[in-house]
Image (cartoon, rainbow, N blue to C red; front, side, top):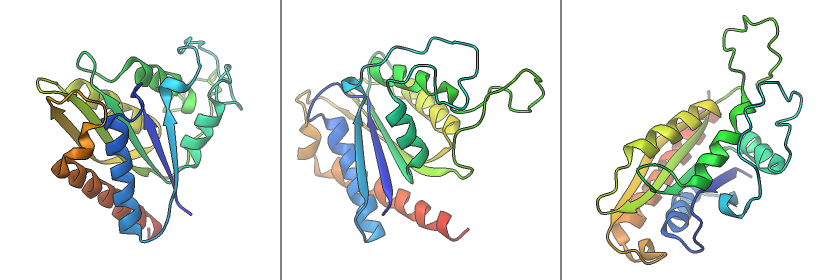
Length: 204
């Protein structure tokens, strides 16, 4: 069974961010024509310290601090990933950014392997997994800052983005995306793109 990982930076239960992420997952499942194992990680519910920039390799472990080892493993093992966040001050939420920063140890900074003292190991699959991005912001929301952050994160963890869903709206009620048929359909279409990319990766 395909493992679809949803990482939500929204601190709100029943948020539009989470609803749209699940709609993306619905579209992916529909296009695949089979059930998927859907794992939702609500970053706001995790208890972890921010990245401490230790400067030493935690190899063979993910990190010197083990609060989110389970989430690290889910990132490594997933077949596709959807990352979502509300827009706060032109970027992702504080919870989302702290989680992204803690994923620094997934791969070496020494890409050319020229540092003899370098001992980080790349702890990711050798293939890129497909993924999608979901942002929810206000009417005057600016999404580019958040986009750059998550696209950089995707590159770091070997995820190839199949597209970004950015919903700019004036209705601040939690979960109001569910009432917007157009944005829900757009989310499902993004999920279908992820499924197609997933199937194409099987035949390579």
